[in-house]
Image 1 (tube, helix red, strand yellow):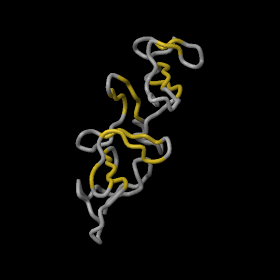
Image 2 (tube, rainbow, N blue to C red):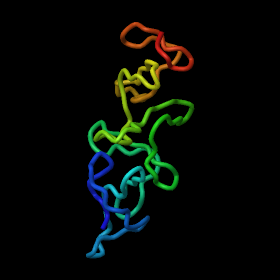
Image 3 (cartoon, helix red, strand yellow):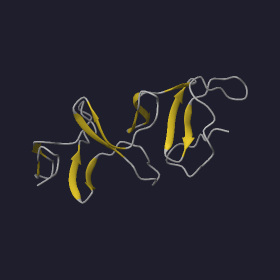
Amino acid sequence: MTNTQGPGSSGSSPNSGGPGVTNDYGIRYTGWQGSGDTWYYVVNGTRVTGWKEVSRDEWYLFSSSGLMLTGWQQVGGVYYFMNPNHDGTYGKMLTGYLTINGKPYYFNQLHDGYYGAMYSNRYAPNGKFAGGDGVLY
């Protein structure tokens, strides 16, 4: 049976299929599929690739095979941080001020075409400068 609760849930049923997944009634499945660190989002039986807004302001990033990505991700030369922690928001793109490996960063919270993008070589809203590596000084 496929776990349909999503990566933020505590469900641990094993993944039961891949692209073209249907339920017991032959209806193409839509929703989360997977367990542990391995998650996919399926729409009408097909795994999503690239960016997907699963619910309002909850963005996830999927590989070309449909695997949900976590941690630092670079897309089009821009860095994003996808939650690597199983804290109820596993895999979700994080925004705002974050401390990662002891260093402060800012990820855009505005819906201006760069939502979730790490600031670099510019000032964050708190007045601190984000260097080329994104670390706030």
